[in-house]
Image 1 (cartoon, one colour):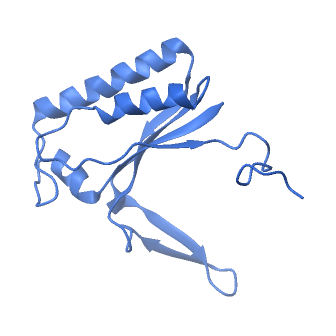
Image 2 (cartoon, helix red, strand yellow; image 1 turned 120 degrees about the horizontal axis):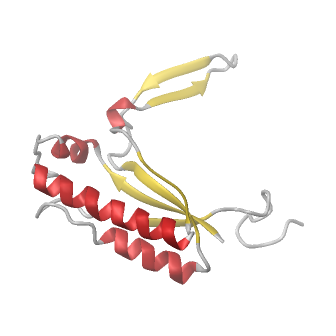
Amino acid sequence: MKYLVMVQGAQADYDAMNGRASEQSPAWSEQELRAMFAYMNAINDDLAESGELIDAQGLVEPARTRFVTADADGRPVVTDGPYGETKEVLAGYWVLDCANLERVTEIAARVAQCPQPAGAPVYPVVIRPVDESGGGDLGGGELG
């Protein structure tokens, strides 16, 4: 079964990785960044070797986000980020093909142990199954 495994972050975390600390996130050293990337690359290498990795990407900082909606006449309305209602955003993801929920949970637990500076915020790693039924899996029940 395919799963989307997501990690979260905030603009403050991206700033901290660029050496700008805040109350929410301490500045990362170059050594801490190298440790984080080495850890994540090792996970990716292991997942590629096991055949479970379909895709994995880190996302750029929320400040570079663009929102597109449509007005009442269907014309596009474009606004820049970051998100107004929430600070936490999707920071990266993996699309994995795993034997079961227990296996993807093991992988998410490994991701959650990624090294980071003391005092850095801890975000949950989110797992969502991919609907491989072509749109028929709406809450586990069958369409009437």
